[in-house]
Image (cartoon, rainbow, N blue to C red; front, side, top):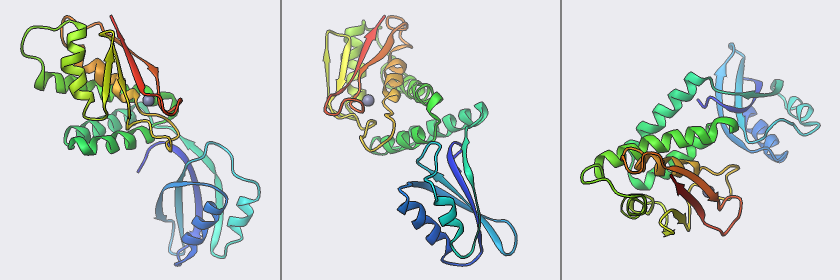
Length: 236
Ligand SMILES: [Zn+2]
């Protein structure tokens, strides 16, 4: 089950057909259902817990229309649930294991799922944390031998090959890198997830003594400005 998001609980009779009528009424009201859990309350009643893509309001009249469906007992209020710090650490640990065990082609979806399970206020920080762990691992595995590289060289030899797995990239000034087609910033998602890449860049560079103090700032994002690349500025 997803720990955070906007939830709506509706109690219905344990008979076939009711759930689908409720779901289509929500759809007709323009509410997008992201997921659902069903649990029995007693022998006659079960509770559906919908996870919805809305923030805080229910269209007027929806409660009445839902409760008018035969077999619907009661519709609750929308509830915003936030994960505890412990749940966030658990989500992070789980995502790290999934990403570590994934093929390059599957990583993107894992990251997008992780991003969408996070509340807005901690989302970027969690994506950066995950990226750093993954970047640290990739550095140790493939780049930690040999003499430390200065920032422009590390950008070309370490950051570029790792980010090229996701999108065509270009660099400039020895300190900027741009992704022409960032897969973490799809226009259909409510929020971008390319903070993950800022974390990966930091994680790839911070274990080397010559680039340990590097700061990574996202200076442009294709999610905000469609058609532009996602661009990161490195400084130390
Ligand atoms: Zn972006």
